[in-house]
Amino acid sequence: MDSKIILTIVLFLSLAGCNRNAGINEKEVSGIHFGLDQMKLGDPVGLLFYDEEYHLFYQCEDAEERASWGHAKSKDLIRWETMNLALESDPGEKVGSGSIVIDWNHTSGLGEEKPPFVGTYVIKGIDASDNDGTQTLGVAVSQDQGNSWTKLPEKKIELANSYEPIRDTKIVWHEETQRWIMLVLTGYEVRFYASDDLLNWEYTSVIGEDILLKTGQWTNLDFFPIDSQWALFISGDSGSPNEGSGIQYFIGEFDGYTYQSLDDKQKWLDNGSDVYAGVTHSDLQLNQAPVLIGRIFNQKYGSPSNEINLGNTFSFPRKLFLKEKYGQHYISSKPIEIGDEIRISGQVVNDQEVAGELELKMPELPFEIDLSIDVNNRLYLDMAEAFGIRFSSENGDQLLIGYHALRRYFFISNVRKTEEDPKAMDHFEYMPYMIDQPVMEVKIIVDHSSVELFAVDGDVSLTRKLLQPNEWNKLVVFTENGRIKLNEARLAGLQSMNEKND
Image (cartoon, rainbow, N blue to C red; front, side, top):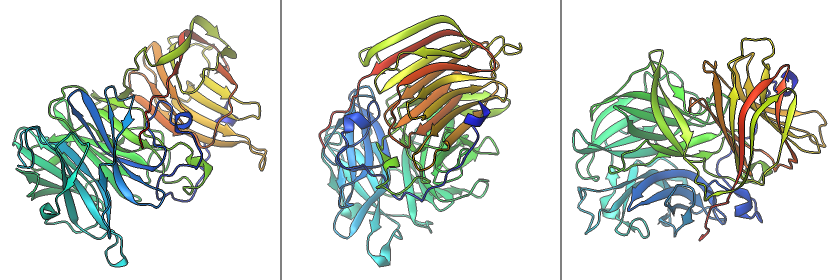
């Protein structure tokens, strides 16, 4: 087992954007994950909920690298319908990152009968004299739930006390002070502004000096209430637990003016290296656990034309929950429920002891696997040192997903044989975790270009982009040096859900 999961870090050139390979059929690539067909998929911008529908906005580019914001709608966060482009770049400018809210109380004066969607976006100059140096934020409004937008050049926002190029913004409503709050990411600092009308902003505070990890470049942020606290997400292009891009987060108190973290050190939302630039739904009327969608992406991967960028997609939507353990606050994440109408076929195995291998039927991609494993005998000698799921192909490629009971960590290991190098090329990612429950519950969502692992009530999450097209033909439950009791294994194929209008 150890030889299969030795930590090997493979560095690639930095990736500036997200591309698709020509000729790839989207439904064969994205599967159960949101993706695009004719355009390059960038970072998510906002997630709203209005009139029983979710609205997802995201950055994208066409073949000539013209930047836009895209728009998609869904009733269940799984079956998406792509709509017309929301915002397109004007000559001499480039639509950058930003934030979108629903002005429920008509504070901006921009709405008519229905609450308007209001977007603020970074205006980037594309000439040499103003490349990423502007501090100007554009404003746009939609009166028809995001289907069409009007830019308001006369409403451009100039921010005081902002000294670095703006990387990202996030706008939320603060109920206690009855004001809008905007966070602005500049360098290694997050600045807070407040407004009564979404148009005129007053500087209130800044954080950043006390944040310990400052490597690479901070690129995206998100800010939202969770239970009685506030969560601050900062995405960066490096520094994550398994190298490369990731989302670090803080839990703290916010009074409408300043933010105070409750813990001294930031934590990571996903211990895999491939969840990045996540956004949660921004909606006053939705009383449920926050839902997050991120981008399955890492800056350490190669150029946009490289085949490792096959199937750029967003992560599967996950609900977020605030927990406290040993005096520390942390966020757990669970994938949203997948309805039976989306499942195509399945297999159920009950009450099996596994010592070595138990072969399962290989479903067609995409699919989910649910495992319930009895680990109550982990203190005894016959408990396996490591166990999990293994996919393999005839040419020797393997994908292993499981738990190392002896060393106490969850892992995803992608072992690939190549004609150029007959030795195994291992891509190994792990999350330390000591199991203290008698039963281990694991969910694995596998698509054409990604695998996502969730375990122990959401405390563990590992997301991995699959770097090459797979040719798996065998699926087994495996153990190493011992046995496990498999209470249940459920496999179900899933429908490819994206409706393409782009």
